[in-house]
Amino acid sequence: MNQPQLTVPKLPMKNEFGQVELAHLSDSHQALVIKHAFCTAKVSLYGGHVLAWQPQDQQPVFWLSNDATYTEGTAIRGGIPICWPWFGPHSKGDVKGNHGFARQSQWQLTAVDIEQAQVKIELTFTGENKHALWPNEFSVKQVLIFAEHFEQRLHITNLSDESVEYTAALHSYFQVSSPSNCQVSALEPADFDDKITGQYSAATALENCVGPLDRIYYTNEVCTLSDSQWQRAIEVTPLNTQQWVLWNPGTEVANAMADVHQGGEQEYVCLEAANTKWQQIQAKSTVVIGQKIRIINL
Image (cartoon, rainbow, N blue to C red):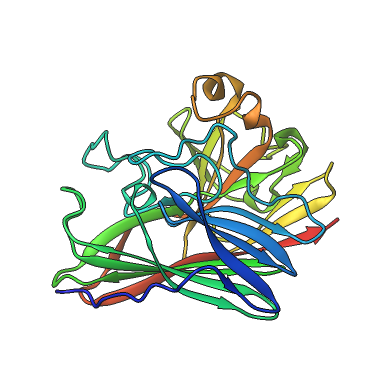
């Protein structure tokens, strides 16, 4: 199936409410820089990757490594990497395709709308035979809303003549004063898979978010990441996802990661709306997943 030709908005775009312009992160990476009365933000076209969102009079919401790499074939460390069409290593054992290929692909800007209350961005990623383990024809439309709150939706369309399966995660790196100051009380009643021990665990108290921590929680309740030092809570409402991933690598693992700056692991907590079990998309059908994020002052 031939894809229709996409219209690319002309940038910079500006009106009385705000502006969107194009900047270069590197020779291969371009980013949208968003300035609005209610917030600032940045989005990399490589990976369709939200790098930053900061509402007015707030600390930055997303953490981005000072040592992030902006080269083809490398994922960007921080912000919201999109793990799709699979989360983690593929179940067939592909060691070169961790977290799928969406976060290491170029996305197309297809719409910009600057309004009084928000900036709405639309990005599109289409293709076929992108990977031997997921050769199907597809289209993913990502809709981003930057305002006093933030919304992210992925409209995933299976353009092939057969059903497909996917897993996914919105791998949000939330900037915090310290993981030791953070709690996510909504996860405590849920059972979880501990990816560090390899064990399935019953619900247990979660005193803080200090790493090493790598868990898949079996709940889709609204989660609030509370930060006692910054006196704020980050409320995350999932859309059509079934699990939460909670991750912080801890100091030892982070020290071995070339794209995490020194002490960076003490500045973020990853709380990821996810479908970690295979989900089906019927032929010629679309599913939508996403999240809505707002800041609550404590």
